[in-house]
Image (cartoon, rainbow, N blue to C red; front, side, top):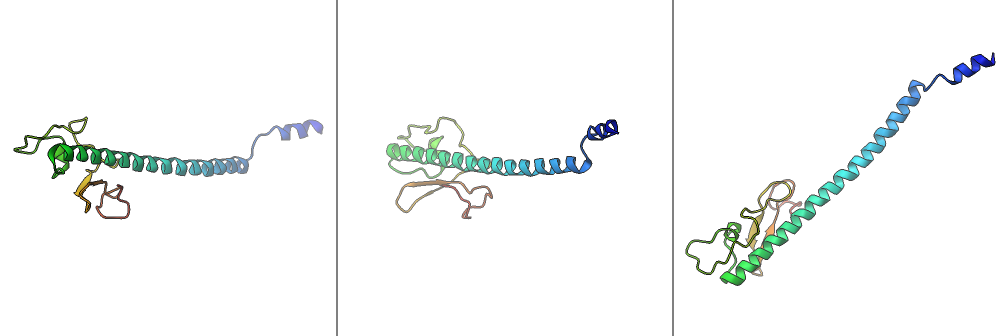
Length: 133
């Protein structure tokens, strides 16, 4: 009789126990996934903010050399026609960087007369709530 009890104890896990463990693992993995994607989005926003600040700084250097802000961001890489004061390129690479969502940066002269470089953000729509400066 005791031999038969020992055999029952060694049988293994029931299907219900295995499913319960799988459900718990899926729940834990979903929490980890949300945390990872959240930090990934924050990293994209931070990277875009840093690149916009770098482009604004290049525009200010252009202003010091030329006496005016560039008409477009491309002027930081290629001299405007007829320019004799241009001392560029004002960026390390010979191409304009893209934001973290592979969109072009937007540029305008602010009311204070300083450069305003920003990204349209994840949705790519200029003027929406997710724009990044």
